[in-house]
Length: 140
Image (cartoon, rainbow, N blue to C red; front, side, top):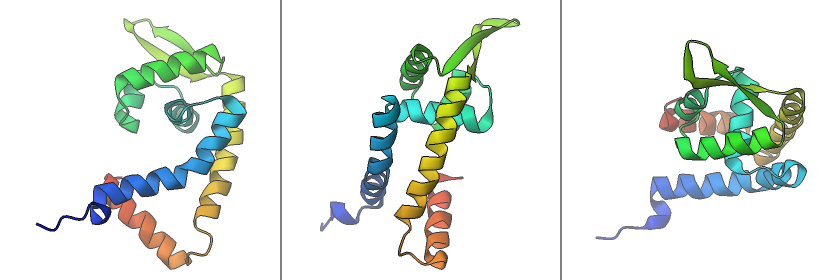
């Protein structure tokens, strides 16, 4: 068998994702000391509003332990708050604080610039194909 890892789609997707996110990762880490999962949790709360950690786990496809750690770190930075749900004390609703909303706005603007830079030199048609194919693979 002549298996070539460098042509294996999951490998290529992972390598592309790492390369594409590296510069942006440096930005949110330098500005806010955030790790990738923290940025993703912040993004989901900023984009979709208040939700539980379980909602984020399901929507973002991140392991619950990683989400739990990210929530604790963001709470420690005062970017989010937790509020128990009256009907179910085991469930908490997470909300961004004003500082969290400010970080979300700044990082979203940086993400948009990063996205444009990634596609620099790629035709609009090719960029649309790339996005359509990746959404299809991701099931979005």
